[in-house]
Image (cartoon, rainbow, N blue to C red; front, side):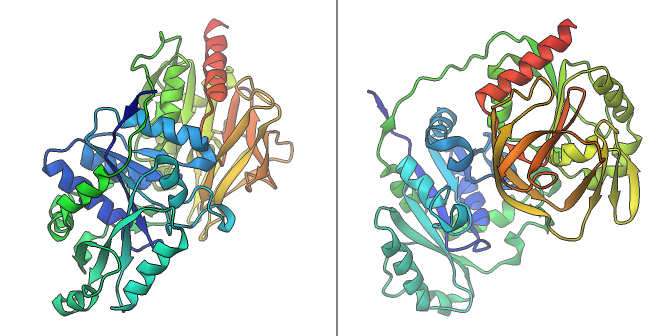
Length: 445
């Protein structure tokens, strides 16, 4: 078996909010400015951080999530996406050892072991000096199989603060990042703003490159062992159907692997904006998650709304998840104002002031439209601040054994050939093929 050497480094953290995203973005920019081709990744089901990675590196950031993808899926996505890159930078999730239900599963450390990737530990040193060494020593000793090469100390208050931390280090220091409010990205209820919503952050991020030992980080990345090579085709099969993909400020949460799975099943993807565009000619439609509540007025007045209802009533397959589910409802209420939506699915949605679901979900398709092949598994993630009120006679196509769904573990509200789910699902090849086959049957009917 042939092997391939891919320099790679994981940016792990002690906890959420320690600065992983900022430092990952800064290092991606630093290597990019030095002429490296950087392939970015994000551990976990996050949509927002990858948008920033992609904007900086010019290469699509991929999610690495063992719960949704399986260990083999993580390896496959990593190897395929890293082709042609000089270095892979992998942003971790939460604390380094934080996984599913308090376990190691789907943690940053889990992905490190799958990919045999070394890590840099990010430590927020606000309010501590020598105690930071105890934190580093504890993370290093907790799991000796985790290869932590060095530390980046974040939010250092002063030169004196740095000097106090910098003596008797248990691991090499790869950087001391001074406290700087200009490094932060504005947030809202689902996390940071998407990359396309913020102005140029390059000048503030230069501080990361200037404050880190880029050469030492490169040596650490190059220490990663070779991985078994796999041969991947760059060619997609002949296009059999057209699937419209809602892509704008309202619908911007998509796993790139899902889009690739549809292409691999024979779909040509047709992007459009439900906020401004008429519905394009297609054999099926896919509405991902995002922020329809921020664009409810535009969505309610767009020509796409009535056109989608007509298409769905005619039996054209439609799949909507989370924000897409809200768009398929009869209405969505935002801060007391009710906005008409497409009315494809029987029920109404309302934005709430607090989180309604957060965590992994899993289940199976049990019945419903043609794209819901009974027995097909569904795995993904829920994260929303809305509640959906289905009509009393609502029918569901998904039964979850993990997660909340729309109502008491039921997800996949359906009508005609339309399905709406709260689950941000990671497509299996079987589901992608089912969507393409449903679209093909619609084309022929």
